[in-house]
Image (tube, rainbow, N blue to C red; front, side, top):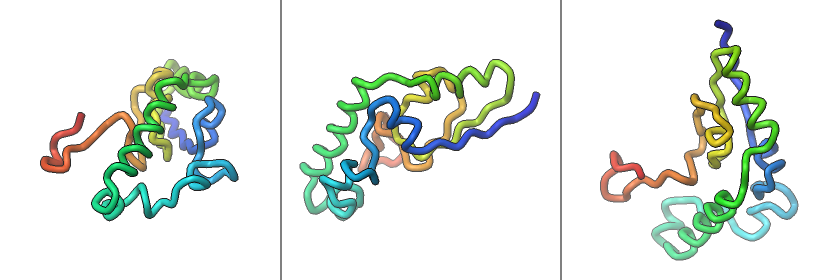
Length: 120
């Protein structure tokens, strides 16, 4: 069986209505990366970091995979497919993709601060 590797980024999920980081009205228009996406930010202002990620999770819950996510998932019927994405959403998985590598982590998975092996 032929292998296909699909690389995706913000554009594929933007079509589902998710905010991107770098567009003019994207997430970085309202937040500075240093204030919400670093270990130092968490230590400095835990409430702001949690608010940022909870807003993103809430937005994700109201979003559905779009035709691009579904088409990529359907490739698995004919090929050995690996999806490599810069996105932190789970839209590829919800569309049916079974092998997805998230380069920047996943919004719906949390790692314990006390035990790095504990992921929920």
